[in-house]
Length: 231
Image (cartoon, rainbow, N blue to C red; front, top):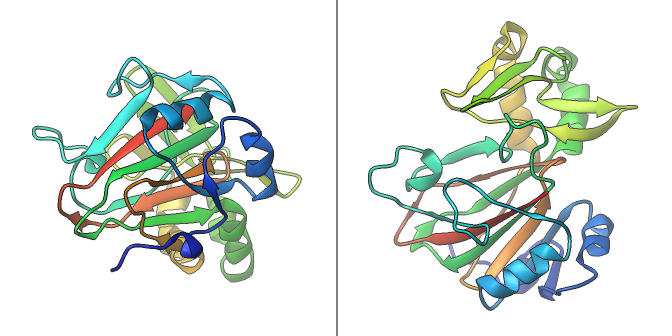
């Protein structure tokens, strides 16, 4: 698939600013796309909205390269499909914001795929209320990473509004029987509301990790992304 032009990117704001970014995130329902010249500009923008979080696979600045990495089996560090997820779902307080910047685009594939939690809830409320009850249950899933563990809903609702999401599909998650039984309906909901776009080098997105799931399609070539998480 051809790469997206700026006019095709959702909520595109042009060059990412150092200040005033959080208001623009809130005005766009938790998703922005942007242009950015380098990682330092990305970090300045990230620091403008909160504290940059250090990740074990990142550098001392808080930048984590997302690319094919020999010897690693994490799907995110391969060229395969990366299923819908949120970042660091096992931690007590996951990152609030995620910034992902395209350092080098893929030859083919590598599309960003996003899913707004509110849209998933609306779909399930209409098409499969049992699946909605399962994924919003207090016992929906167990996430474990190292010493971190979280037990709770995949979609956390308060007064009918999405206030938190946690999801991954790998050996570090255990779903309840009700979630497992209704998983086809949940997957159908994700597919129905997905938003796709392909980033060119120098383009990126910022999303609210509490209210959006994200994923990536398989790709070919030397695609490399730089990720920054913000508390």
